[in-house]
Length: 106
Image 1 (tube, rainbow, N blue to C red):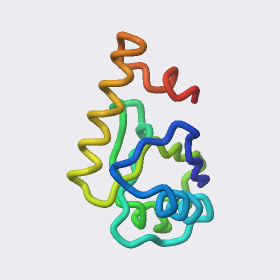
Image 2 (image 1 turned 90 degrees about the vertical axis):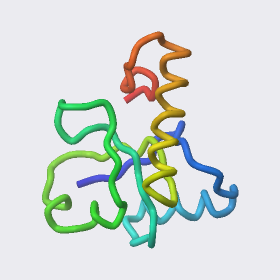
Image 3 (image 1 turned 45 degrees about the horizontal axis):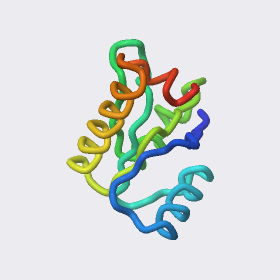
Image 4 (image 1 turned 135 degrees about the vertical axis):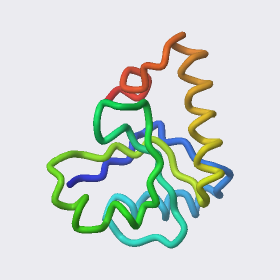
């Protein structure tokens, strides 16, 4: 399993310094207490998925032969839901359709 943080990553109101620290910890697969990440779906059943970041560090996900593209980060599940809404608003505004892969250049 690989975790890749997208260059256009969205976040809730997190300070710039704290945000860089979070992104660095995610890139190096270090545990972070209370962090939720928004990724593209594991299977083709949806648009985006919200995971507790520490869940992705468990053996089940580590054995997967795929890359998790992090599209957004938040400190709570409720904030993560708001980040998903913000992403979808921007995608619809720019592209007119829910094409997440095209918007994030995945």
